[in-house]
Image (cartoon, rainbow, N blue to C red; front, side):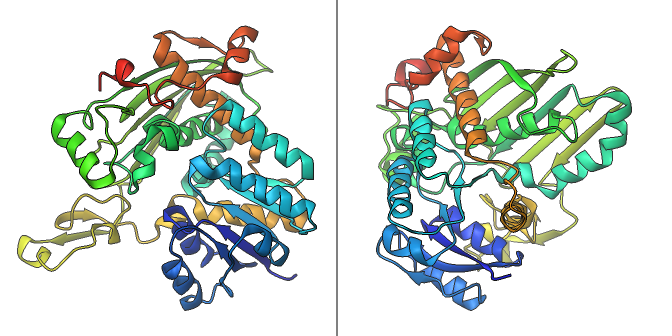
Length: 414
């Protein structure tokens, strides 16, 4: 079989992670790039590791006829206009086999609905890239516990955390462009992980029915004068005027439609985790069993003293969002694989080869947007959002959070 020709739309941080992942995926070549960002590093990496031609195109319409799969790795605030260009290219005859959309699908439900409407015009198979669901550790937990859950029932509580010290790029910090703060940026990961890890083996990823969401959002670190000034100086983002949350926590209640049992998924995300670097933490409890996973627990440790550290500059060579270049460092030698980037690409390649849908598609991405918006609405109202109430669901269809509108100061005290 001929390799799938990927066309990257976007060449920033997440595209770089996927390039690293594709070194470990058979049956894919990187055929092209379109990006408003500089592509020198992405193209150089593609050529150095012989991942494909990596040709730079000026427009999506120019690239689309020369690739099999387009991957939307662009910032959230241009996601919709990029989708419109892809759909136009398909209507003009580009024979695409699939579209990848990096999380999140959209910033709110109106945008998510428009994304799905556009996709419906061309009937294009999709893969929603939520890497953490594809982490090998998550799959291993489910496989190891399959006999146990068969006898004792699936987990009744899953807790998923993602924390680091803050994003790399100014648009992530800007709630009007990103779609909010850490709840939008990383909460979508934890919502998906909690839902997936509660789901019984062999059932579809949307088998459990969301019942309610309760959430709390706060601005704890980056609203303080010192850190607020740092954001302003470094990124031009003013949290005294339009702040976003740097901490979010909450609970989603699900219902098993076969047993009627209610299950809980707790999430916590923050941009104020000033420890080693990015930490993904997931644990779960069932009847007579439990599991726990922590990405900062590594079999590899390196110690660098103060004298030696003077020669170092790249903290992230050890770990994504690393906060230190000295002391006892937690090292993850293969982060792209650890975090699930490798396996979500493998899933898509196998799905296309077998004529089957990917594990996660954009319809699933739309449901994650709905849960994310319910979390924002819950925080604004200080109340539980009942997802079984038709009136609440209707409200979410047009809801845009105050924080996303740039009006979060009253809510967050920024």
